[in-house]
Amino acid sequence: MNDPAATPPRSSIKSFVLRTGRMTLAQTRALEDLWPQYGLEAGDELFDLDHIFGRGAPRTVEIGFGDGELLVTLAAAHPERDYLGFEVHTPGVGHCLLRAAQLNLPNLRVVRADAVEIIGRCLGENTLDEVLVYFADPWPKKRHHKRRIVQTAFATLIASRLQPGGKLRLATDWMPYADWMREVLDPHPAFYNAAGEAGFISRPESRPVTKFERRGERLGHEVRDLEYVRR
Ligand SMILES: C[S@@+](CC[C@H](N)C(=O)[O-])C[C@H]1O[C@@H](n2cnc3c(N)ncnc32)[C@H](O)[C@@H]1O
Image 1: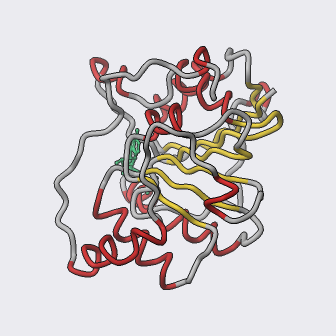
Image 2: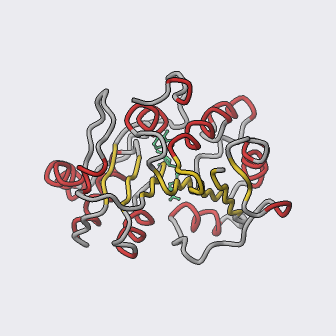
Image 3: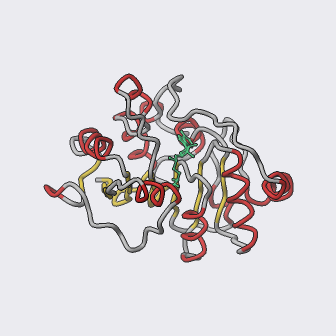
């Protein structure tokens, strides 16, 4: 049972808009055929991750994995770790399942639902080693800033699910969002910024390039990487 104080109340403000992307036939089939193998349905109980993955290994959560290419690449490169991805965009989930099955990955599971809600309800405290938030929707208009996923309550939630020493890694190609992340996370008592005064870390070689990063590059956007360590 989680400490209710570490579980923020469910918010009606969502960090995403459900896009009605067209599903390819292969993605539709992947959802039907591969969901039992890779998909997790969230109920009211905590996920039993040791049981789900069949072992106790260091665990990475990726929030908003898009088409899942980064998640799949990392899971293939690190068979010693387990990966749990959250995404609400159904075609992206279908794409991720297809790629996971092509590589026959045993160490990856996906949740097709709001990460904030399900992490609060179904992931136990001190269970994660790493949380990735790469190229989260920047919600550039001021009236939409409340929809940005990085908020103090979100940081408190993630801190409670990370083990001490665990890492929250973020990247964005939207400079005002990079500054916002620092404004929220630098003063948060549960984290320290691994870059110290510099604020941003160099691009980690271990971070594969994502679709949204390539799009940002085409638009001439610079990318900022951030790393926060759970105290
Ligand atoms: C800009 S895209 C980036 C996708 C991917 N990380 C990449 O770099 O290619 C942000 C993604 O986060 C997903 N997302 C936003 N808020 C989410 C939430 N609360 N739970 C799950 N997915 C979310 C959106 O559906 C979208 O696919």
